[in-house]
Length: 322
Image 1: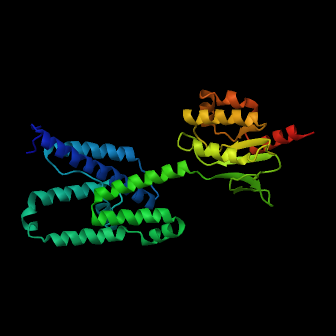
Image 2: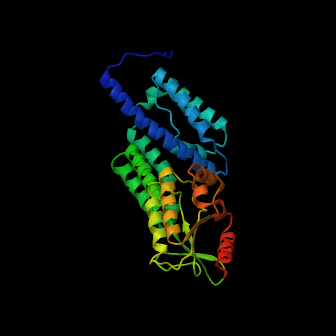
Image 3: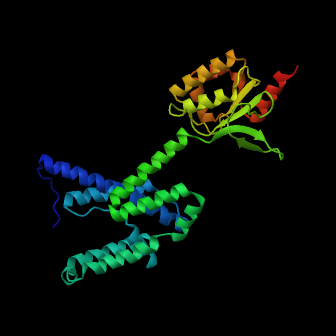
């Protein structure tokens, strides 16, 4: 009979419990979510990860109160089920029933089964989960992601699964931060076919005489506001500058924070004193509220915020007429 109960614990036991629980939580969240996504994509199915995690949480709560094992979405067991032809929840229920029967009646004969046999079965199933072709494609198309994948694999094999997962999460977040801190930016210049190409920022780099269309490829916040200020200032060098308008292509700028807004205001003031107009084009709708909240719309002027690049170019050419 299963008994649900709580017991008194001392501080050392609580510390150990928290450490083990945190490791189990990291394993459960990452491995279960990854398993769901991978096999759902393989069969062109939709998956609701929140429902999966809710079910795992309920199962783990029951396991904790009854002294059971941690419940997790296992990629190896899922692969075994797929190889056996299981495609529905009935297959899962049948598997659970068979496991229950084995635990009740066959544990004594199975105690003589060598551990290496179980390890070999899991290893053979896990080996088939490694996508060597996909890893090769990653190496050819994205060397940075390839290094991350190989590094994570090495840490999992040599140190532990939890450490490998945490390393992958931390390095992935650092790559996102690095991209936001050093976004893909430059000056838009029309090529021979009429399409835009992005050229590096530098003095005297212009879209057309007197006009610079400057693209900044990330949300504008405190960490990259200095880079934004530096590059725009470079575009109007040397002074006195021949540039009359700097139009910021804000298509990729989904957010502006307080610090960055103050940088833009100071930049606007400096450019105005130098006789240069600052304008924005292709501002996303979700960013317009940021411009209003931080008083940037007022500082820049509503007439200098354009829906399209061509509208900005037309307004510049209109003001450039003699």
